[in-house]
Length: 186
Image (cartoon, rainbow, N blue to C red; front, side):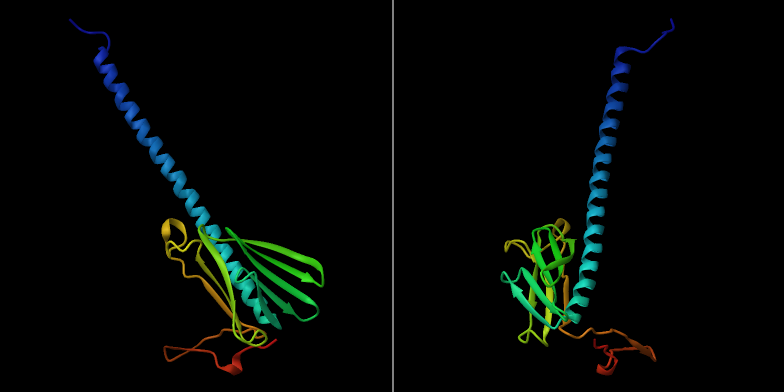
């Protein structure tokens, strides 16, 4: 005699296989969403650090004098014409504020990697030395910073009052560093 349908056991096996496949698919979808979020955050942090590095180099090169405030969490740059620029390190971000006298002209924010803090330093001569900014771990427990503990060795250095034009000559297959005559001075 021929059967017209499926048995209860066959239906239960089909349902259980379908549910296992659905749970695996949902798990993979969750992992993909987390990876996408992590990648976008990393890209945003990288672009923000690149903008911060360029702006910081330009500001330090145009400055007449630099000073630190709040230990190493704040960098104040005095520029010609009663202008000043202040960089401040806050948890998860850095801010740049440009002032003309007492009037705020511009306020910018930069995203920093998770568990990182920005530290500023200046040389011994605040009028002709150098200034630097670097990322450090938020706590002293570990030395790794960034996504999943990746080491992040980000550091920006510039000479106060000297905007250096970095040009490299290539001759006979060798890369030569710029000479002092090739430096652009403001």
